Image 1 (cartoon, helix red, strand yellow):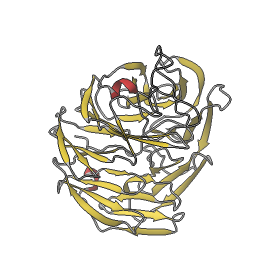
Image 2 (cartoon, rainbow, N blue to C red):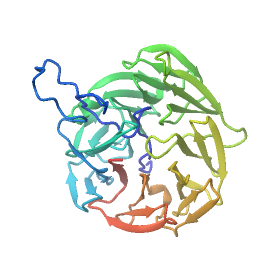
Image 3 (cartoon, one colour):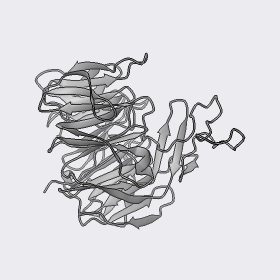
Image 4 (tube, one colour):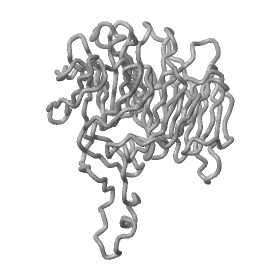
Length: 403
Protein backbone atom coordinates (compact mmCIF):
# COMPACT_ATOMS: atom_id res chain seq x y z
CA UNK A 1 0.00 0.00 0.00
CA UNK A 2 1.26 3.46 -0.81
CA UNK A 3 2.14 5.51 2.24
CA UNK A 4 -0.10 8.46 2.93
CA UNK A 5 1.28 11.89 2.35
CA UNK A 6 -0.17 15.25 1.48
CA UNK A 7 1.77 17.42 -0.92
CA UNK A 8 2.82 20.71 0.69
CA UNK A 9 2.66 23.98 -1.18
CA UNK A 10 0.47 22.87 -4.09
CA UNK A 11 -1.65 25.87 -3.95
CA UNK A 12 -2.75 28.82 -6.01
CA UNK A 13 -2.52 30.26 -9.43
CA UNK A 14 -0.57 33.34 -10.48
CA UNK A 15 -1.04 36.96 -9.59
CA UNK A 16 -3.50 36.43 -6.74
CA UNK A 17 -1.72 33.33 -5.47
CA UNK A 18 -2.17 32.12 -1.91
CA UNK A 19 -5.08 29.87 -1.25
CA UNK A 20 -7.79 31.41 -3.40
CA UNK A 21 -11.08 32.55 -1.95
CA UNK A 22 -14.31 31.73 -3.65
CA UNK A 23 -17.69 33.33 -4.05
CA UNK A 24 -16.27 36.84 -4.32
CA UNK A 25 -19.38 38.87 -5.05
CA UNK A 26 -17.77 42.31 -5.08
CA UNK A 27 -14.92 44.08 -6.80
CA UNK A 28 -11.57 43.82 -5.01
CA UNK A 29 -9.97 47.13 -5.87
CA UNK A 30 -9.46 49.00 -2.61
CA UNK A 31 -9.57 52.33 -4.47
CA UNK A 32 -13.12 51.99 -5.77
CA UNK A 33 -16.56 51.17 -4.39
CA UNK A 34 -17.77 47.55 -4.36
CA UNK A 35 -19.99 46.39 -7.18
CA UNK A 36 -23.59 45.69 -6.23
CA UNK A 37 -25.15 42.34 -7.02
CA UNK A 38 -26.41 42.08 -10.56
CA UNK A 39 -29.96 43.31 -10.85
CA UNK A 40 -29.94 45.04 -7.47
CA UNK A 41 -31.27 48.56 -7.09
CA UNK A 42 -28.59 51.25 -7.17
CA UNK A 43 -29.94 52.44 -3.83
CA UNK A 44 -29.57 49.01 -2.21
CA UNK A 45 -26.73 48.67 0.32
CA UNK A 46 -23.58 47.34 -1.35
CA UNK A 47 -21.82 44.35 0.14
CA UNK A 48 -18.57 45.34 1.88
CA UNK A 49 -15.29 44.89 0.05
CA UNK A 50 -14.10 41.29 0.18
CA UNK A 51 -17.49 39.91 1.20
CA UNK A 52 -17.75 36.12 0.93
CA UNK A 53 -21.13 34.46 1.42
CA UNK A 54 -21.19 32.08 4.37
CA UNK A 55 -17.79 33.14 5.71
CA UNK A 56 -16.48 35.47 8.40
CA UNK A 57 -13.55 37.73 7.60
CA UNK A 58 -10.82 37.82 10.24
CA UNK A 59 -7.84 40.03 11.02
CA UNK A 60 -5.33 37.16 10.92
CA UNK A 61 -4.96 33.76 9.23
CA UNK A 62 -7.34 31.16 10.68
CA UNK A 63 -4.85 28.29 10.76
CA UNK A 64 -6.13 24.75 11.26
CA UNK A 65 -4.88 21.20 10.93
CA UNK A 66 -7.07 18.67 9.14
CA UNK A 67 -6.05 15.12 10.02
CA UNK A 68 -7.33 11.72 8.96
CA UNK A 69 -6.38 8.16 9.78
CA UNK A 70 -6.26 5.12 7.54
CA UNK A 71 -9.74 4.07 8.69
CA UNK A 72 -11.21 7.30 7.33
CA UNK A 73 -11.86 9.21 10.57
CA UNK A 74 -11.35 12.95 9.99
CA UNK A 75 -10.81 15.71 12.54
CA UNK A 76 -10.06 19.41 12.63
CA UNK A 77 -7.71 21.09 15.12
CA UNK A 78 -7.77 24.88 15.48
CA UNK A 79 -4.20 26.13 15.98
CA UNK A 80 -5.41 29.44 17.45
CA UNK A 81 -7.88 28.15 20.04
CA UNK A 82 -6.55 24.62 20.59
CA UNK A 83 -10.03 23.19 20.08
CA UNK A 84 -10.68 20.03 18.04
CA UNK A 85 -13.75 18.61 16.32
CA UNK A 86 -14.40 15.43 14.38
CA UNK A 87 -15.90 15.68 10.90
CA UNK A 88 -17.79 13.09 8.87
CA UNK A 89 -15.71 10.07 7.94
CA UNK A 90 -14.36 9.45 4.43
CA UNK A 91 -13.58 6.16 2.65
CA UNK A 92 -10.33 4.78 4.08
CA UNK A 93 -7.65 6.97 2.42
CA UNK A 94 -4.57 5.58 0.73
CA UNK A 95 -3.50 8.87 -0.87
CA UNK A 96 -4.10 12.54 -0.12
CA UNK A 97 -3.26 16.05 -1.27
CA UNK A 98 -4.20 19.59 -0.27
CA UNK A 99 -4.25 23.09 -1.75
CA UNK A 100 -4.30 24.81 1.64
CA UNK A 101 -8.09 24.88 1.97
CA UNK A 102 -9.43 21.65 0.50
CA UNK A 103 -8.08 18.21 1.39
CA UNK A 104 -8.68 15.49 -1.20
CA UNK A 105 -8.31 11.87 -0.11
CA UNK A 106 -8.46 8.72 -2.22
CA UNK A 107 -9.22 5.12 -1.31
CA UNK A 108 -7.87 3.89 -4.65
CA UNK A 109 -11.19 3.73 -6.52
CA UNK A 110 -12.57 7.20 -5.80
CA UNK A 111 -11.67 10.50 -4.17
CA UNK A 112 -13.35 12.60 -1.47
CA UNK A 113 -13.11 16.37 -0.98
CA UNK A 114 -13.02 17.87 2.52
CA UNK A 115 -13.37 21.64 3.00
CA UNK A 116 -11.11 22.74 5.87
CA UNK A 117 -13.20 25.89 6.22
CA UNK A 118 -10.42 28.48 6.42
CA UNK A 119 -8.38 30.18 3.71
CA UNK A 120 -6.38 33.25 2.72
CA UNK A 121 -6.85 35.50 -0.31
CA UNK A 122 -3.70 37.38 -1.33
CA UNK A 123 -4.53 40.28 -3.66
CA UNK A 124 -0.96 41.54 -3.76
CA UNK A 125 -1.45 44.88 -2.02
CA UNK A 126 -3.84 43.52 0.61
CA UNK A 127 -4.90 40.19 2.07
CA UNK A 128 -8.19 38.69 3.29
CA UNK A 129 -8.50 35.91 5.88
CA UNK A 130 -11.69 33.84 6.01
CA UNK A 131 -13.32 31.36 8.36
CA UNK A 132 -16.29 29.11 7.53
CA UNK A 133 -17.67 25.73 8.51
CA UNK A 134 -15.50 22.71 7.77
CA UNK A 135 -17.26 19.76 6.10
CA UNK A 136 -17.01 16.86 3.70
CA UNK A 137 -18.06 18.30 0.32
CA UNK A 138 -18.46 15.30 -1.99
CA UNK A 139 -16.67 12.77 -4.14
CA UNK A 140 -15.09 12.11 -7.54
CA UNK A 141 -15.10 8.74 -9.26
CA UNK A 142 -11.34 8.53 -9.95
CA UNK A 143 -8.82 7.25 -7.41
CA UNK A 144 -5.11 6.75 -6.89
CA UNK A 145 -2.21 9.09 -6.14
CA UNK A 146 -3.34 12.65 -6.79
CA UNK A 147 -2.38 16.32 -6.81
CA UNK A 148 -4.47 19.43 -6.12
CA UNK A 149 -3.94 23.07 -7.14
CA UNK A 150 -6.14 26.16 -7.01
CA UNK A 151 -6.59 29.64 -8.41
CA UNK A 152 -9.25 32.12 -7.38
CA UNK A 153 -12.12 30.47 -9.25
CA UNK A 154 -10.80 27.00 -10.17
CA UNK A 155 -9.50 23.94 -8.34
CA UNK A 156 -7.76 21.21 -10.34
CA UNK A 157 -7.30 17.58 -9.34
CA UNK A 158 -5.03 15.24 -11.31
CA UNK A 159 -4.42 11.51 -10.97
CA UNK A 160 -1.03 10.86 -12.67
CA UNK A 161 -1.29 7.06 -12.71
CA UNK A 162 -4.46 7.13 -14.80
CA UNK A 163 -3.63 10.27 -16.79
CA UNK A 164 -6.95 11.82 -15.77
CA UNK A 165 -7.52 15.35 -14.50
CA UNK A 166 -10.49 17.60 -13.80
CA UNK A 167 -11.14 21.27 -13.14
CA UNK A 168 -13.76 22.17 -10.54
CA UNK A 169 -15.74 25.33 -9.89
CA UNK A 170 -14.13 26.60 -6.68
CA UNK A 171 -17.10 28.79 -5.77
CA UNK A 172 -19.36 25.75 -5.92
CA UNK A 173 -16.93 23.77 -3.75
CA UNK A 174 -17.21 26.51 -1.16
CA UNK A 175 -20.98 25.98 -1.20
CA UNK A 176 -20.65 22.22 -0.76
CA UNK A 177 -21.14 21.22 -4.41
CA UNK A 178 -18.71 19.35 -6.68
CA UNK A 179 -19.19 20.95 -10.11
CA UNK A 180 -16.87 19.95 -12.99
CA UNK A 181 -15.89 22.66 -15.47
CA UNK A 182 -13.45 20.54 -17.50
CA UNK A 183 -12.24 16.95 -17.83
CA UNK A 184 -8.82 16.45 -19.42
CA UNK A 185 -7.77 12.99 -20.58
CA UNK A 186 -4.07 12.12 -20.85
CA UNK A 187 -3.02 14.79 -18.35
CA UNK A 188 -0.92 13.64 -15.42
CA UNK A 189 -0.51 17.28 -14.43
CA UNK A 190 -3.21 19.98 -14.53
CA UNK A 191 -2.72 23.49 -13.12
CA UNK A 192 -4.81 26.67 -13.17
CA UNK A 193 -3.38 29.83 -14.76
CA UNK A 194 -5.79 32.75 -14.67
CA UNK A 195 -8.63 31.83 -17.06
CA UNK A 196 -6.56 29.00 -18.58
CA UNK A 197 -5.43 25.51 -17.63
CA UNK A 198 -1.91 24.10 -18.06
CA UNK A 199 -1.71 20.36 -18.77
CA UNK A 200 1.24 17.98 -18.86
CA UNK A 201 0.52 15.31 -21.48
CA UNK A 202 2.86 12.34 -20.91
CA UNK A 203 1.66 10.48 -24.01
CA UNK A 204 2.62 13.37 -26.31
CA UNK A 205 5.59 14.66 -24.25
CA UNK A 206 4.00 18.11 -24.28
CA UNK A 207 2.83 20.89 -22.02
CA UNK A 208 -0.37 22.39 -23.42
CA UNK A 209 -2.27 25.54 -22.52
CA UNK A 210 -6.02 24.87 -22.51
CA UNK A 211 -9.05 27.10 -22.28
CA UNK A 212 -10.98 26.96 -19.00
CA UNK A 213 -13.35 24.34 -20.44
CA UNK A 214 -10.46 22.09 -21.48
CA UNK A 215 -10.34 22.99 -25.19
CA UNK A 216 -6.89 23.27 -26.76
CA UNK A 217 -5.58 26.76 -27.47
CA UNK A 218 -2.72 25.55 -29.69
CA UNK A 219 -0.16 27.06 -27.29
CA UNK A 220 2.38 24.69 -25.76
CA UNK A 221 5.92 23.34 -25.72
CA UNK A 222 7.78 20.04 -25.82
CA UNK A 223 8.39 18.48 -22.42
CA UNK A 224 9.84 14.99 -22.19
CA UNK A 225 7.98 12.87 -19.62
CA UNK A 226 6.05 15.66 -17.86
CA UNK A 227 5.58 14.87 -14.16
CA UNK A 228 4.96 17.05 -11.15
CA UNK A 229 3.73 20.60 -11.16
CA UNK A 230 3.12 23.66 -9.02
CA UNK A 231 1.81 27.20 -9.33
CA UNK A 232 3.81 30.15 -8.02
CA UNK A 233 3.40 33.92 -7.96
CA UNK A 234 5.10 33.91 -11.38
CA UNK A 235 3.19 31.19 -13.20
CA UNK A 236 2.57 27.46 -13.62
CA UNK A 237 5.48 25.00 -13.53
CA UNK A 238 5.49 21.49 -15.03
CA UNK A 239 8.48 19.21 -14.43
CA UNK A 240 10.22 17.63 -17.44
CA UNK A 241 12.99 15.05 -17.76
CA UNK A 242 15.55 17.80 -18.45
CA UNK A 243 14.14 20.71 -16.46
CA UNK A 244 10.76 22.40 -16.28
CA UNK A 245 8.32 24.33 -18.44
CA UNK A 246 7.13 27.65 -17.01
CA UNK A 247 3.88 29.14 -18.33
CA UNK A 248 3.09 32.77 -17.51
CA UNK A 249 0.26 35.10 -18.42
CA UNK A 250 0.95 37.80 -21.01
CA UNK A 251 0.60 41.16 -19.22
CA UNK A 252 -0.79 42.64 -22.46
CA UNK A 253 -3.57 40.04 -22.66
CA UNK A 254 -2.08 37.91 -25.43
CA UNK A 255 -1.44 34.17 -25.43
CA UNK A 256 0.31 32.77 -22.34
CA UNK A 257 4.10 32.67 -22.62
CA UNK A 258 5.69 29.21 -22.51
CA UNK A 259 9.37 28.85 -21.57
CA UNK A 260 11.70 25.91 -21.01
CA UNK A 261 14.05 26.21 -18.00
CA UNK A 262 16.75 23.60 -18.54
CA UNK A 263 18.22 21.96 -15.43
CA UNK A 264 21.91 21.08 -15.04
CA UNK A 265 22.62 17.69 -16.60
CA UNK A 266 23.80 14.57 -14.81
CA UNK A 267 21.61 14.83 -11.68
CA UNK A 268 18.25 13.26 -10.73
CA UNK A 269 15.28 15.21 -12.06
CA UNK A 270 12.82 17.20 -9.97
CA UNK A 271 9.21 16.04 -9.83
CA UNK A 272 7.59 16.79 -6.45
CA UNK A 273 7.74 20.59 -6.12
CA UNK A 274 6.83 22.37 -2.88
CA UNK A 275 6.89 25.93 -1.58
CA UNK A 276 5.27 28.30 0.87
CA UNK A 277 2.00 29.37 -0.62
CA UNK A 278 2.45 31.44 -3.75
CA UNK A 279 6.17 32.19 -3.43
CA UNK A 280 8.27 32.25 -6.64
CA UNK A 281 10.99 29.81 -5.47
CA UNK A 282 10.13 26.12 -5.16
CA UNK A 283 12.05 23.12 -3.85
CA UNK A 284 12.14 19.51 -5.02
CA UNK A 285 14.04 16.37 -4.11
CA UNK A 286 17.08 15.50 -6.24
CA UNK A 287 16.99 11.77 -5.66
CA UNK A 288 19.40 10.82 -2.85
CA UNK A 289 21.83 13.62 -3.72
CA UNK A 290 20.06 16.54 -2.03
CA UNK A 291 17.51 18.99 -3.33
CA UNK A 292 16.76 21.43 -6.11
CA UNK A 293 15.73 25.06 -5.84
CA UNK A 294 13.97 26.54 -8.86
CA UNK A 295 13.59 30.32 -8.85
CA UNK A 296 10.75 30.93 -11.29
CA UNK A 297 11.32 34.68 -11.24
CA UNK A 298 14.98 34.34 -12.24
CA UNK A 299 14.39 31.21 -14.36
CA UNK A 300 17.29 29.51 -12.57
CA UNK A 301 17.98 26.11 -10.97
CA UNK A 302 20.30 25.45 -8.02
CA UNK A 303 21.31 21.98 -6.80
CA UNK A 304 22.08 21.73 -3.08
CA UNK A 305 23.84 18.53 -1.94
CA UNK A 306 22.96 17.12 1.50
CA UNK A 307 24.72 14.83 3.96
CA UNK A 308 21.77 12.45 4.16
CA UNK A 309 18.94 11.64 1.72
CA UNK A 310 15.77 13.66 2.20
CA UNK A 311 12.16 12.48 2.34
CA UNK A 312 10.50 15.88 1.74
CA UNK A 313 11.67 19.45 1.17
CA UNK A 314 9.85 22.82 1.05
CA UNK A 315 11.12 26.27 0.05
CA UNK A 316 9.92 28.96 2.47
CA UNK A 317 11.34 31.70 0.21
CA UNK A 318 11.35 34.37 2.91
CA UNK A 319 13.86 37.14 3.61
CA UNK A 320 16.24 34.63 5.26
CA UNK A 321 15.87 32.10 2.41
CA UNK A 322 14.75 29.27 4.67
CA UNK A 323 14.44 25.78 3.23
CA UNK A 324 12.85 23.13 5.48
CA UNK A 325 13.29 19.40 4.92
CA UNK A 326 12.52 16.06 6.55
CA UNK A 327 15.46 13.73 6.15
CA UNK A 328 15.32 9.96 5.77
CA UNK A 329 16.18 9.51 9.47
CA UNK A 330 13.19 11.56 10.64
CA UNK A 331 15.02 14.81 11.43
CA UNK A 332 13.87 18.27 10.46
CA UNK A 333 16.73 20.10 8.73
CA UNK A 334 16.64 23.85 8.09
CA UNK A 335 18.90 25.84 5.80
CA UNK A 336 18.98 29.64 5.66
CA UNK A 337 21.07 32.55 4.40
CA UNK A 338 21.59 31.00 0.99
CA UNK A 339 22.36 27.56 2.46
CA UNK A 340 25.23 29.03 4.48
CA UNK A 341 23.51 28.26 7.80
CA UNK A 342 22.17 24.79 8.68
CA UNK A 343 20.47 23.45 11.81
CA UNK A 344 18.60 20.24 12.55
CA UNK A 345 16.51 18.53 15.19
CA UNK A 346 17.01 15.06 16.56
CA UNK A 347 14.93 12.27 15.02
CA UNK A 348 11.23 13.15 15.44
CA UNK A 349 9.41 10.50 13.40
CA UNK A 350 9.97 6.85 12.48
CA UNK A 351 9.76 5.95 9.70
CA UNK A 352 10.08 9.24 7.85
CA UNK A 353 8.16 7.83 4.88
CA UNK A 354 4.93 7.80 6.94
CA UNK A 355 5.18 11.46 7.97
CA UNK A 356 3.82 14.59 6.29
CA UNK A 357 5.47 18.02 6.34
CA UNK A 358 3.44 21.22 5.93
CA UNK A 359 4.43 24.82 6.60
CA UNK A 360 3.33 28.43 6.58
CA UNK A 361 5.23 31.69 7.01
CA UNK A 362 5.97 31.06 10.71
CA UNK A 363 5.93 27.35 11.51
CA UNK A 364 6.41 23.88 10.09
CA UNK A 365 4.06 21.02 11.04
CA UNK A 366 5.20 17.41 10.97
CA UNK A 367 2.69 14.58 11.37
CA UNK A 368 3.83 11.76 13.65
CA UNK A 369 1.33 8.90 13.20
CA UNK A 370 3.19 6.57 15.54
CA UNK A 371 2.61 8.94 18.50
CA UNK A 372 -0.69 10.43 17.24
CA UNK A 373 0.71 13.96 17.48
CA UNK A 374 1.71 16.76 15.12
CA UNK A 375 5.04 18.42 15.90
CA UNK A 376 5.19 22.21 15.51
CA UNK A 377 8.67 23.50 14.61
CA UNK A 378 9.81 27.13 14.66
CA UNK A 379 12.12 26.84 11.68
CA UNK A 380 13.41 30.43 12.06
CA UNK A 381 14.48 29.79 15.67
CA UNK A 382 17.14 27.14 15.03
CA UNK A 383 14.50 24.50 14.25
CA UNK A 384 13.13 24.69 17.78
CA UNK A 385 10.43 22.16 18.64
CA UNK A 386 7.71 24.54 19.86
CA UNK A 387 5.18 21.88 20.88
CA UNK A 388 3.75 18.48 20.04
CA UNK A 389 0.01 18.75 19.44
CA UNK A 390 -2.35 15.95 20.44
CA UNK A 391 -4.91 15.47 17.68
CA UNK A 392 -8.20 13.51 17.89
CA UNK A 393 -7.29 10.93 15.26
CA UNK A 394 -3.98 9.43 14.19
CA UNK A 395 -2.48 11.85 11.61
CA UNK A 396 -1.83 9.44 8.76
CA UNK A 397 -3.02 12.36 6.60
CA UNK A 398 -2.22 15.99 7.45
CA UNK A 399 -3.23 19.24 5.79
CA UNK A 400 -2.61 22.72 7.19
CA UNK A 401 -5.42 24.99 6.00
CA UNK A 402 -5.93 28.75 6.25
CA UNK A 403 -2.50 29.64 4.83
